[in-house]
Each structure stands twice: as C-alpha cells, then as structure tokens.
Image 1 (cartoon, rainbow, N blue to C red):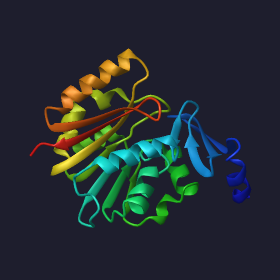
Image 2: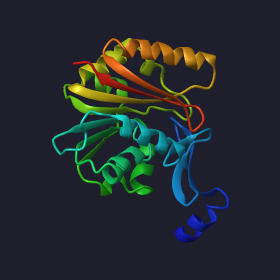
Image 3: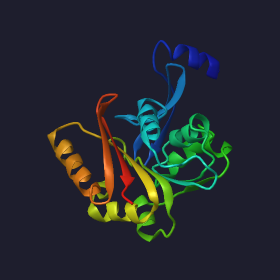
Amino acid sequence: MNFVKKYLSYLRVINQKKYESAYNGTLEINWLNGKKILDTTNTNYSYGNLGEVLKKGMQKVTTPFKEASNEILILGLGGGDAVKQLRNDFKSKATITALEIDPVVIEIAVNEFDILSFSNVNIVNQDAELFLKYSTNTYHLIIVDLFFDATIPDFVFQQSFIQNINNSLHKNGSVIFNTFILDDLHNIRNQKLIHLLKTYFTIQSFKNLYGHNHLIIAQKII
C-alpha cells in the first residue's frame, strides 16, 4: 500500500492520516514526491522543505558534532527529521537529546517515522524553555526548531532564552535557529534576535530559504 501511495505522490499530495493536537491543531501524515511527510494546517513540519533547511544548517556548522563523545540537543523533535539526518546523512554518532512538548508529535515520530530505531536518542516530553533554564549539561550543537503550527513561541526571541542557550553550550559549540520571515514585523523580530545573539556568538544568516525560512547559525565566541 505504501508503494502505491509513494508512486501516486509524484502526481499529487496523498493524505494518509490525521491526528488532532492541543498544541498544533490538525497534524497530517502526507505523501509528496515519493516521501512521507508531516504537515500542519499551515506549514510543513517534518521531512519536506523544512528538512532541507535544517540540512543546510548542519552543513554550515563547523563545531564537531559527529563523534560518539559529542552531545546534541534538539529543541522541537517534530517527526524526527533532524535525528534521521544526523544519523543517516551526517553519520553522527553523538548522543542526541530531543525535546518535544507535544505528546501527539512524539507519538507520530515514534509510530509513523520509526524514530526509536536510532540508538542513543533520548526523547524528552518537556517545555524547551524550562528545560534550558534548569539544565546543567552542555552540548556541542543545539538545534532550535520550535513551532506551534506556523508560530514560533515568543520566548525564543528573549534575552533570557539566549543566555540559557549560551550557558548550555560547550565552549566551542554552535546553535542552529530555524525561523521564518513573512512580513516586516518578523524581519524586525529576527534582526533583534541576531543583535542579542551577537553578545555571545558569531553569526551566519540565510534568508529566503525555500520560501520564507530564515536560518541563523551561531558559533560560540571562545
């Protein structure tokens, strides 16, 4: 059956299943261009264009994140696209901790995308802001991919969150921020974020990726 859906998905989007979430509304398992993807009502959530954005970020990071001794923190598991890329595309053997506040999204990552097939991956059902506030661990790479449908939580753009990110990074660690710009207010918001980040990091900025995505890569200043 999946073979048929994969074939037909090159002709049109094939909807397979829907889940209802208190955090993200309707979540859809779709097939598009031969790939199984996770969508919300308003955006791709995992394994579509979003995955290409995250891949570009990982390609640009210079901090080591592939060795077994490295640790990676993903804020926003989604369907687990970043985990699969780290293991399959980048051959990373690092310990991965993936936070996801939405239990329905975790269910989807496990049941629809087989995320538990990857070893040394710890999935934590917790709020990312609180986790970082009280975390005593440090990471070589942090991926910030926090969305509720097509909305990014306000705390991502606050100084306290940026400071907690810095405190949770290894001395030569990096952060990948996946954001978007749809209007002038978003542009101003992101420029303020970059200004905050420059207190602790050197910055690479990539706008208009696959439409409206704005990728920000921050390397900790030693």
